[in-house]
Image (cartoon, rainbow over all chains, first blue to last red; front, side, top):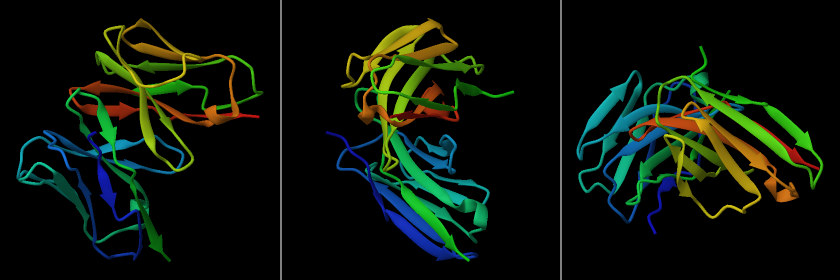
Length: 110
Length: 110
């Protein structure tokens, strides 16, 4: 069935570094969504992508909808401590159910 | 004003008990969901309601029964709680594919 594979599973970076993570699938998705979950909170939508090739920014975050429609990436520039959390990609399956990747855990080293 | 609210935030109970979690959204969305997040932080959809009607019911034991008295509320009742039910349960509502999550209810079954 349709699945979303996120990589890396975890990242340990220094404050100020840029971050890149991606999400891939063997199936085509027509929408890609990126969420962030802070500890003890619910996921919050960061960026929604609706068109193949689309590149969208939200502050220091940039996400792209791959032209094959089977992948998407999220970049964070100049990371800061509050970027720590779990980043999920998500998308609607053919039956319209939203599925989530397993998340990329971002840690910032002191 | 909280967009999607859940009560309680924490729920600790004994095996075999019956408990309910309430969810309300003030976003005017037609669709609401329940998700379960396990200890590995994997998010899995359980149910989806559109205008008070059940539209998605993933493979969830029938001990779990959602109830939607109106389109702004989606409650989750769980009968005969089991140890494996311990998790964080998130309510969400959506506009098209963009989902807005509640803060979560951490259920611990002893």
